[in-house]
Amino acid sequence: MRTIDWVPAEGVCPGHIRLVDQTRLPGELHELEIHTVDALVDAIGRLSVRGAPALGVAGALGVALAVQSLPAGEVEAAVARLRAARPTAVNLALGVDTAWAAAREGGPEAALAAALALRDDDIAGCRAMAGRGTALLARLLPGRPKLTVLTICNTGALAAVEHGTALGVIERLHADGRLDRAVVCETRPLLQGARLTAWELGRMGARYDLIVDSAAASVLAGGGVDAVLVGADRIAENGDTANKIGTFALALAAAHANVPFLVVAPETTVDTGTASGADIHIEDRGADEVRAFHGVPTAPADASARNPAFDVTPAALITAIVTDRRVVEPAPAALSANPFRMSLNEEEA
Ligand code: MRU
Image (cartoon, rainbow, N blue to C red; front, side):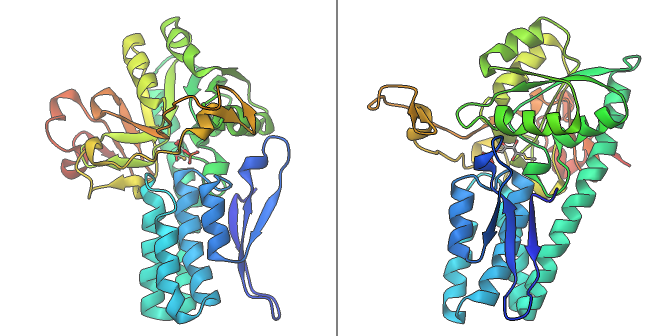
């Protein structure tokens, strides 16, 4: 399955974007044909396409769409709207910037070539993270032939192009016969864990238990979970990591239970232009998503509610960050410095 891809021009039809509409899962695997930048911005806002790596590819393909379909005078504003469609995942801005730079240099073909290169890099990068992540787990947890791992949100194929990041590691464990089971946090308020991760694990034939988010701390404290694996939307230069709301709480609970806490994300999610987690813009998705789900009220209609979509896990709580190129372990002694500047305890392999 390709979560997002480019459909090449055929005859008089120009090229366009095809993506899985994740709002319809797990009920229906439905693809959207995206022909305009405005439709793409809308799909991103509604989370039809979501997850940092997929957003990066969407942003780059969106620029290719903009330069082929819009009058020259409208392209720059459309590219800016696309770049601002969601603020936290650095991959979206990076994907847009990469393809836009190529477009200005070499026109529509160059923009498309840059976007397709990002797509292909994502596929190769997720494979590399799966290999590096499973090897790290073997090193951190020797003598445990089968692992139970806990995860949050969706970091699978649906959040990337073909394979995932943290869920890509879990998929590889399963393929290697090293997964006992996954424990999946449902991920309120939009249920990416329950709707998407459980769906992906089911398709893989992997065993899993879905839990409500508030059960995670006691499940970890009770033993029986070997490691926590999460993705990332932006990793600051000091290793602080923004990811789906609830990730910070998992890291605290994992530290309490002495369970390794791994972040798995492509190098493109590392933002060395952001010094620390305090500088990361956290998306606020508004009160309605907390007061109702799919139109069904879950609270009084006038309830005051907060809805930060992400939180920041301090580097001190992260055992290791696994990228497509390296493993960075923000060791406590190094935390006054910046792990991504100084490459401390870094394993290139
Ligand atoms: O709001 P979402 O569903 O886009 O949030 C996604 C996450 O928080 C993921 O964990 C993150 O983007 C990494 S996806 C490989």
